[in-house]
Length: 321
Image (cartoon, rainbow, N blue to C red; front, side, top):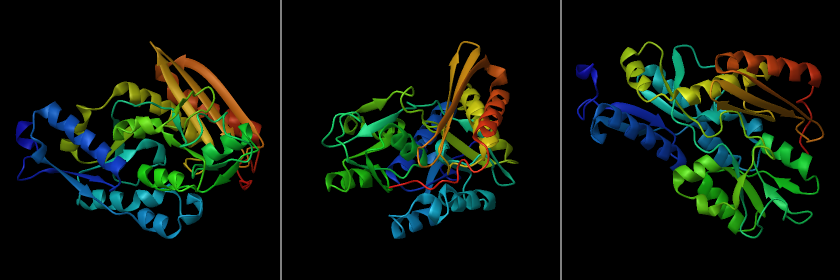
């Protein structure tokens, strides 16, 4: 395989968005590949791709993401570059990825998963419980908004998008009293100190695949497949197989209030799943423990059970606030 490895003259091109977190994830991918094959960093090229989602997010900053086209807007141009050969691999936050890939692409390499928890962030308040009645909380996540309404219906919610740095500026300027961020992103950015602490999954079940980085490739690219297999984390893969099967069995998107977390204990896998009405008025959950190899089947079966309990139109309610 040595003769097939990238070189500074012919680097492997890594596609990513340009936010500080996206770049941190791309650099982690590069560094892991370089270490696995004893290659210099110059054998890789980070290619920043501006997506239509980045443009729309700036124009429609106060609109919910679902109204401007969903999270697929943040992957479209990157996947097009992958299909046309402009890049060799694409690095994604897995919680933002739909369960179906475009024809010709494969997503089967995951880096070791980071902290799955949501982080509570506020310049003035120590915790969610410490927020006074009527406090303003900013979030663009339908899951977090629904979970928050269900737990604290007295709070006021406002749309809150942008990268970590943008959201911190909004908090400092008083747009909101608090927000939530993924603890994994804060860790990767070296910004854990901005958080008041992580929220236990027992109190706020995270998004499906939160904390995981996925690396997408062309399905017929054998060299890249071999390289990525050297850095793939099988434990993360087993956990995500169950979680993403759960997501696929519900609606296959990341635009509805769905939470899920798989955890391993030896040869057993515990999967917890939760669906919420967007207005927080109803929460349905389930949990199961199965052998690891049965994780994907368990995810699909859990989704079917919750879908049956929910009935038609469960996700159709509009969030309030």
